[in-house]
Image (cartoon, rainbow, N blue to C red; front, side):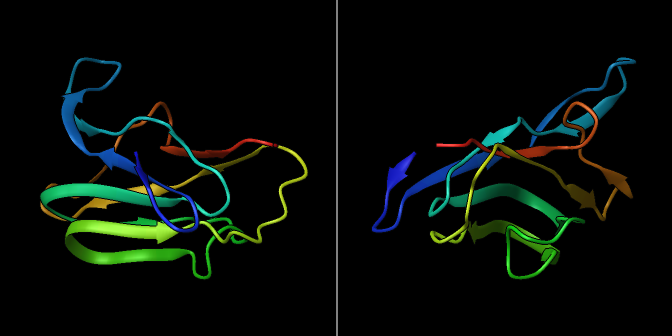
Length: 113
């Protein structure tokens, strides 16, 4: 995690792994970040699209479309967090036509202060 003027940088790396049935897939850990933090998804050479189906955290539900490399998004520092927010999101891998695995869907957690 790196310090920035508004918060921290939380790096999320897409990694090769296995799903619950032992099938090879790409996995990502749960993200825990606070208002003002920047989330940096390190996708490597994978072409990805990232969506947050529920609005409210980011300006747009679409963070990346067919993007390779690093994807960054900052949680607005003025986001009113009155209780813990847990957002499911999707990362689609264009080469394999599969979604990244992270439990059920990857999750971004914004804890209540």
